[in-house]
Image (cartoon, rainbow, N blue to C red):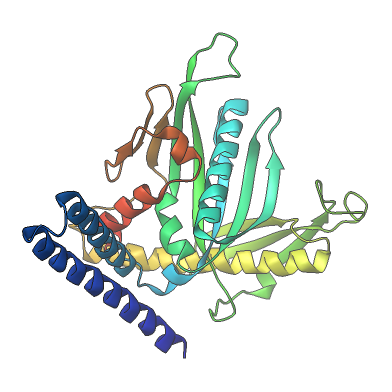
Length: 318
């Protein structure tokens, strides 16, 4: 039934493009006859171009994981208060973007900065194609501005890392070895009612991950304070663990594909991907070279053009 529903969506999108292209053809004829102005034809053309590009972009999101929700984690880099303030600005940017898409956005972990901003925050973003769009945000985001925290008013550079993995649901099978799993509990801080700071509802999951191919081990640590109950937080922490393990499997597939297609341009997930230069009024993506001078709109969540540029250039390579 789900497959039929997905196919129906593609048919509807194709029909929409076909209708607007037919409308454009008629608009040219009407313009020749004097029944439409050139400006009106231009408007129909822009509509047809947008519909076609939207269909092309969705065609870049045909992998199983692209349809899933996303777990987005923001971690402030070195630089103290300035970097932590930058992390909070990115947090707000992604919240605004999710609202624009009509996605459900839940805060699962939040650590305040020492003086301002945040050290780290984790969001669960649920909605159709959320991971497919947000995978373009994986990497290091660079801010250049005159710092309000610097007494001399110096221009400073800060870095914050963004990590995005698919949010797995019950339809995805991910193996978790119970022998490699352990838990800590702690008292939550922040909003949450009478239990906060009185009962140890916060949980910290420790999982010893072993790469079957290399034999290397890595400890995965996940904190969750979303729910008022310890049980609810454990349940969600397990879901986040499965999301990370699923992403590791996808990374292996991507690495194998990259070896086969060695001639293609690679995307380094940990590299600097975008610069936000406030005093020069410029935001530039270093992978696609797409840039805009409307810095405020970007910080208010208008990042669709950056996502689109990334998917149109690299979407078919992953």
